[in-house]
Image (cartoon, rainbow, N blue to C red; front, top):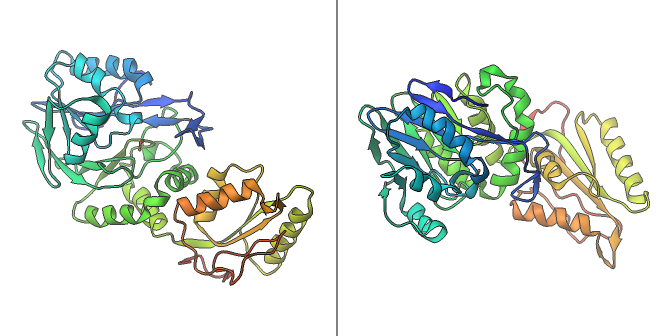
Length: 364
Ligand code: FEO
């Protein structure tokens, strides 16, 4: 989109859509692209909250210059220094003389290491504020969500939370920027996939952040990826709360690794038996064909997870080994495990398999 979009009074979205990157973090497919959301807050002073990935710097600047209309850019707030938001820090500092880079103690350490910047900075504390002469921004430090320096910025007047990556999702913004301009429920799948891929391993830190956020009233959630939630911010906050608790639904995921159809036949028989028993939501994945990004998202919210695998060179079939390793990386909790190692050609159920056609949600 060529123009800035008004989010609230004196708050503008200056985000960009990335339809070029095929794999987020060089791992996770982006069939629908992704947005990098940058926001400009203007009062007596001006602040840009987060930037965009470096290739989109010229586009950001063209909109920023138009919005500033000759005013000075006073602050760049770094909620999170990962390069998809903070890559062009040095370029911004060079282009906007006098710009002060705002971050917490950990941000400053990383700023020095990544960008060799140790001046022109403004250190803020957890709960500290920045007065923009008519607008107050408050900072909420949320470490390891999902980098050590992560924080959020809260616009007190608009009760607007610039939440960084948290509450974000995959998918570019195709004209619609706000939740009330799109079928918000249709974003859930790609938001869940983003959550599991990026935040799964730090779910406990997401929960800590959720506790901190109870202290503020949030009318708008403006993340650094995906839609701005101004109509129903509780929707995306509820999703993140549920997923970071690793709550499950009454569904089952059956994953097989099969070279000559035999394990596949077994997996299909298991899935069929579950259907006969009344399990209404069964997702079958061929580990050689479904990307782990999608399997992880399905597995995260399913009450039952069944793995069946061929062996290879007297080890677990490598695509299945990769998936199992990913589950470990993401700290996916399991309630019950087999009492012994699976025999060759079969794998053990690794979750609580107490599925009930009547139950719609519950813990693993
Ligand atoms: Fe969107 Fe953690 O960077």
